[in-house]
Image (cartoon, rainbow, N blue to C red):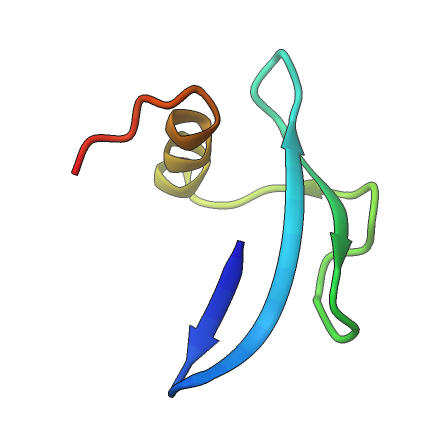
Length: 60
């Protein structure tokens, strides 16, 4: 995922979703707040969107 803020790319990061639905951070630019190997624990809405994207179920 690439996050753009005010027209500037701020972070580039990659997560992997485990079979039980956890998001694990794999790699990112320097300064990203989650270390590689850590689980992303965030709002259920964000985890749900990540799951939908990883399974090609995202509706527009």
